[in-house]
Image (cartoon, rainbow, N blue to C red; front, top):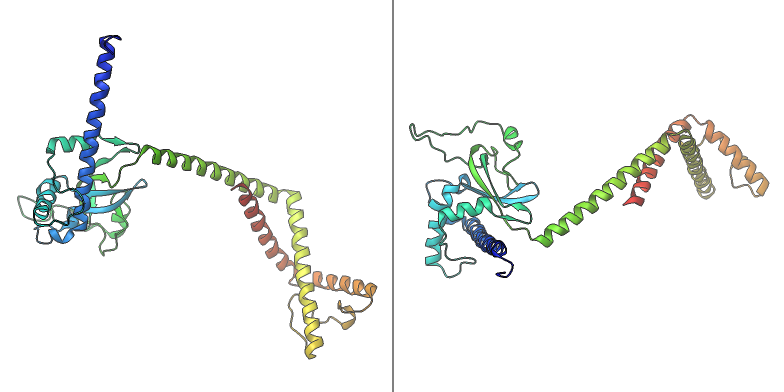
Length: 321
């Protein structure tokens, strides 16, 4: 580096500093994440505090496809860390960090500046929602936030929509809070996510194209004629099949089977059970004519056309997936 000159040395020093700073900030962020994880796992530790924990802290808050911790920034220093330090001193069964020696200024700077492969890990929200309210107006001692909002209005906001929002009354307390992503995103995970998103977009585009093409074909004269012909053939085939079954039942038990697809005036000479091949074909054609003249034939064809259209579109879409 010295041979390359002072500028090269300066660039190398800056890279080393940035790398060291990034590593330190990552360590701070992961420590804060572990602090909040322990808060969520030891909720009874805060039961004797003057403010309810769910008015200061919430885990598993979903935002833009990621899960976040939502908490009051001051509570991290005045409530969470002091309570956990007491736990660390009394218990040897704590899983995770057992000390937190970072300076508040460094922590706040790390939370605001640190980025992983997924972008910024923390963000502020001046109108975050909490389950319960512990806000106080210092001059009057009354509740300082508006808890009278409806449940629908509260849940319609883009923030603070948690998977655990099952308490009555919704998220009524509005106050500034900090959101910290619950886990860091690695570069390889982000690359895989990008690949998955690209593949999903490709499939969605292909499916949309296939669906539009299928609908365009079905709306054409050729497509409508083809669907109509198929529908009529299927309705006739189903009716003939039922006629054969009804005739077989008639031979077995001597009773007439009800069948709405074919006329009830069919004579034995027009069924498909006639021995002669020629007479069988004549009977079949006669049956087809009567089936087509049946009052329900048009409605059945329309229903069959709808089914064929759905099946055709579904098949074309599946071919593109």
